[in-house]
Amino acid sequence: MALKSVSLWVCANHSHTQLGVSNSGSNRSGSGWNLRFDLDRSRKWECCGVLAQRATTPVEDEKPLTSGFESPGGTDQTQITESRGFHKDLNSLPRPLSATDLSSPNDGLKVRVAYQGVPGAYSEAAALKAYPKCETVPCDEFEAAFKAVELWLVDKAVLPIENSVGGSIHRNYDLLLRHRLHIVGEVQMVVNHCLLGLPGVRKEELKRVLSHPQALDQCEMTLNKLGVVKISADDTAGAAQIVASNGLRDTGAVASAQAAEIYGLDILAERIQDDSDNITRFLILGREPIIPGTYKPHKTSIVFTLEEGPGVLFKALAVFALRGINLSKIESRPQKKRPLRVVDDSNKGSAKYFDYLFYIDFEASMAEPRAQNALGHLQEIARFLRVLGCYPMDTAL
Image 1 (cartoon, rainbow, N blue to C red):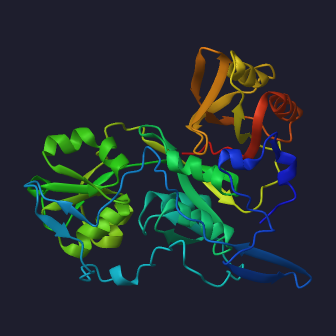
Image 2 (cartoon, rainbow, N blue to C red):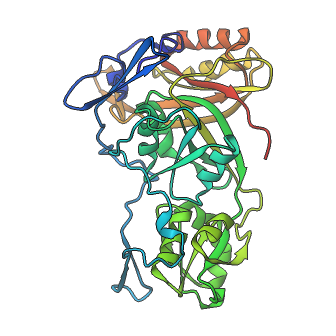
């Protein structure tokens, strides 16, 4: 859905097709489907969309997940079967929303917030921190949460973008450019991992531990002392759900205390992360940008590309330093459609360079003249520039 404010915040000297960005404007058409809503009885909005195909090129932090997991012996597999109703409320939990699900728009009485995972996930806790009275909607993958906002199934999405120990969530950086949503806020949350198991099981009895790969990495020292086999799962709360629903007495899960309560598991150990200062930063995404202000500290997120040349990146970063603007985050991601750039300077051959997108967060509001001047200056240097959002900083942990 095109927004009038986008043209003020987006500047490109080349077409988006070079960057692998599809046009998500209001003129989209095809063999997809349409949703139409009447708002305020006098203004009709139309949301037309064709379900996008998943990326064919995997991001470097993505690994395929299997429905079962190998035992320490090697070939034996424990297959994930249907729920046995281990916890009395397990079957009543909301089903994760998939990218192909359709439902009627909400009635506006309560904010609906999408997150990746199942009930008890850290992302759900972040959504409730941002919107304490919201209705949380679980999604089976990150892209499903993006699409849920675009298709008016939910109002907002809360997704992790970086962790103080594990680093950046590369998949969500790529999705920020692929989709036309706006960053409208951020949530920073301390993550305390717990070791969960079935009631009556002691941690010394565990042979395997199931959790998200980043959670397993963050608890590596504790898990190595136990001598357990670490097995990857879609998310932390999903690991707890698997242990509970399948009655796996020799398998534990690394998840939150809330997940233990939801799925009827015992907390065998608390705060098992290697680093006590384990903080995850989440982004709040919406269909429309918020009006930036100066009443409280703001942060602005942008993405841009540069021409190849000596000192070009230095010049791009200098536009902020010259105006006293602090950069809080710099992330580079390769362009999917143009991974290599060929530059031929002589008859002796051609040199190949990696072509990158640069994501930057800087601590200033778009309402400030210094931020506007910095982006105007950067526009003269950059081959492509897009403002992803301007939003209040979250300083409370």
